Image 1 (cartoon, rainbow, N blue to C red):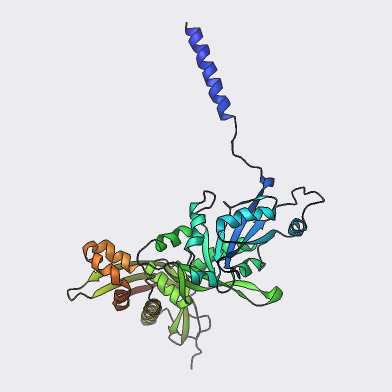
Image 2 (cartoon, helix red, strand yellow):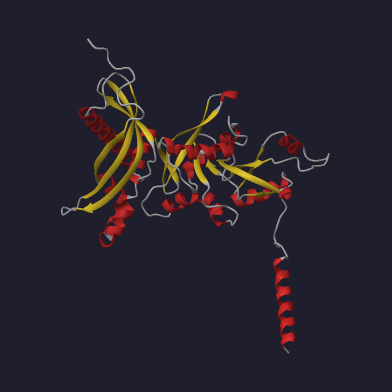
Length: 394
């Protein structure tokens, strides 16, 4: 009896192991896919339509036959292939690509989605829906806005990468070094988009130069009202915004220094924002920024190791940071766009009062008093203490 039970158990175990060896039912071979690295979406010349460019990585010629299309042969000489189609929606355009591409477009490796300026001004909500709904699209894809046409960005060959979309993704990552450009993934953009008051933002990108000298450059921040582009922040205003959002990672601030100027490196930061409704009904937002940094370089012969001179540098750093924050506040009020998320903060802290504030938040936002408190400290000066070329003794 025991032997029979043991045999039955072995048979059942063998059958279960066979199920594990069956493989993936929906697997697809690599040579049957066109791996997309970036999408660019522009307003079409035809009313109500959009032009979408997909940048596909060309991994190899895939053993294509002699009668393959001329476009495929052209693509095989490059590391990428830009394929553009026109349609009424993203979904229909993706299906329409099959008229030109012999492989199905595959999006899980997509790095960026770029919206053209004209399209962004008209609204991009309808063109985000597919990327949020489709199971192949990752929610950590970078969102960007082009100062002109989005497709132009994918046409510029990077100097250090073979595929423009990858170079652009790396460029966005590197913005942490200056904190003068926002970094927004599709999930972050959606979070702001579904808010009743917080304005969406995205990095601005543009083509600089002509011909072979063209480069792609990050050039500030695009500001949306709902899903429509309403303006932009320059690099200084962008860092002012990032101070409030506690997303300044690094950067350089040049300030006046005894005997010349000094470049101060931002090493670490922390920001706390407290909103308050005062007894007279007015509203305030208190922004407290704590920053520590190093002396990166200096011009002139002032001895910055002296305690009094260090205090001067720290005060100048405080003033510079404060000025950046207020530059962002002024621009946000000019655009009637709560890019800081103050409205959501009031909602969380004062849920009852918010019911009456919500309807006229645009007006209240323009009246909000922003108070900025900065505590900047210098922690080091590099390998030297005194200037490289001290003043000559008289």
